[in-house]
Length: 246
Length: 314
Image (cartoon, rainbow over all chains, first blue to last red; front, side):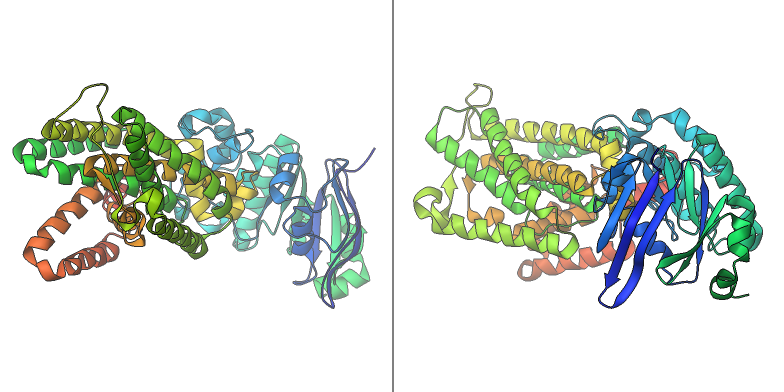
């Protein structure tokens, strides 16, 4: 059986600067992979390549057995790989509920331009996701009213509306106060479990990694330096020295 | 929906009331509504965060098609002329749209401007077909088979333009609230997110662009019929600028805004010409500054503020 996400010799170089250095990587269905690494180690670049924002110089990405190298983000999302962003990417002129309704409608082959959005959208699915991420109370507020933590949740919630097989989250808890972090992660993990979504998340907080990941991959200068069970990777001397700075 | 009905009723009362009280206002009112239709085309683009300084070209295309057909086939009914003129602009919008939707913001605006100036020049140079800078006369056609004298024709045209405007307000407002319309507005706040939902922003903008070309086309066809003459000036950049001016004046919050803006604009122009005949543009400029400074989302921005105060109730 092939993996859900697989990369072979993934390389990206800007002139002499190598930001992805022949990455071979496999992700199985059901995993919760935490990606750790210093700033500039190439974590976000890796996500950007997998989700189609950047085309690799060499190598191959396949998702659920299909080669998706060089395909557009739109195409890849439609295959079932969604992502959320370090800086939440939301529709600031819309309400919380409308954002989710739009995300839900995105799964349709074409958007209707006569029936009102609120009547075309699957209201029950929107309610369920609102409940999952605890945003039901603020659903009619403009997105611009939300604090950062809830914006992060909404960003992920929009991806959940797509019912993806794989969700890649770029630093879901950055910009969230440390008291809120565990709350945000609890909500996210519950939502992922409920929808049986495989997940990759970039994370700096070791506590969070230990608690929520089933596997950890440590990035050092454009490559994976260690990959395996959280305890083993976090105890690795190279990782401790170069990633965690212990 | 409530605002659509209020807006439609208010617009009808104002237009028909003014026309009944001051019959000489009929033609200015027709022209104002035509401007409103075209400005609504710009509003569609504004909602996507784009602006075009060349949309008068679509009004011009429709106007010339109407003029050409009315000369070539004098028995063609007014409704057929309007339909065919609008259709020509729609088709032009589809073709040009396929190319320009790859650009954004200033590039999008300037490309439209450039294309409209090419059309303007061609119309001026191909004298044999277009009558050059003198333009083409549009004969007075029958309306649904009825032949009308000048006065009756103007009244009928005013009613027709008003009905068209009301239908367009209803239809376009419905589009704004639909999934495609809301996604078009989402394009303004975050195009990347749209792509990451699997929605093609280009396709959305193309749809909006074709709609806006069609609206400008309808406006141009009606304009040509009511003026009895089309000239290349119809597609000149100053005209495109007027459409943008009205769109900003009215705001993009509701489809009715463009028409409110257009009426205001027409009357401003009329009174400014009387008050300060040598410098009427001064008054327009001052108005625009006031609007941008105090009401950056136009007159319909007031509705939005009220709606926000009511807690998101529509």
